[in-house]
Each structure stands twice: as structure tokens, then as C-alpha cells.
Length: 144
Image: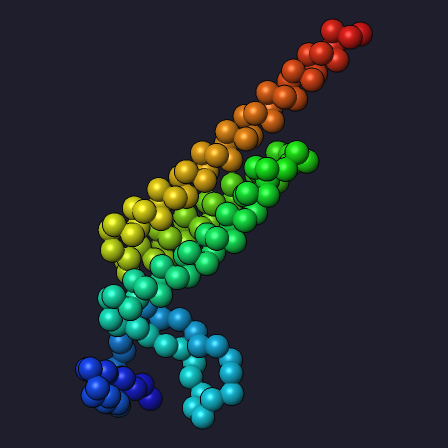
């Protein structure tokens, strides 16, 4: 059985519904509640936009912390950069495949722009690492 919760200012109503709702679906957290809820479907576009923005920003901030560590670390190598680039690509694919139909155009472009900036910084660090490795190898060859 499905239920529809509607809130208009101070009015709160619950309706029973047997059909399928068209909206963003996600699983509820497993907590002890009075009622067992398998999944939640949000149909309000502004609420969906807010939920997806929070989810994206949470994941993006985790990614930024990792990338910040890589960019500021002297020990970073191409493997760490490749992992971070894979995470950027994963987040981009989630954004384009799962969230695109729910987000408004402005937010989608903003999120893609953020990912592009981070990806460019990682690629720049990767090029600098390769250049440093090449100069080190050249100096080593000259020393022989």
C-alpha cells in the first residue's frame, strides 16, 4: 500500500493510493519506526532539487578533500591522481545518468562546471608529475 503525504501551510493530509508515483525514489534509513518504510518517492520538484543538491554536495566535498590532499602532497603519484580522476568520472556519470532528469538546468551546469574544474586541476598535476619524472630521467642519463 502506498501513502501520499500532502502539506499545505498548516494543513497536513494523508491519502491512500494504489498506483505508482512519478518522482525521485530513494531508500529510507533503517531505523526503528512505528511503520516499516521500504522506499520514499518525492514528487515535489523543488524538494527533489534540494535533496539531490545535498547528496551531490556531500559526495563532492568528500572528493574535494581527497583531491586537496593529492594536490598539496609531495608524495602523490600518478596512481592517486588516476583514482581521483575515476571518482570525478563516477560522480559525473551519476549526475548525468541518475540526477539529470530531476535537476534543473542551472544546477546541472553548475555541478558539471565544478567537476570540470577539479578534473582540470588533477590533469595539470598529472602533467607536472610526468614532466618532473622526465627531467629526473634525463638528468640521470646525463650523469652516466
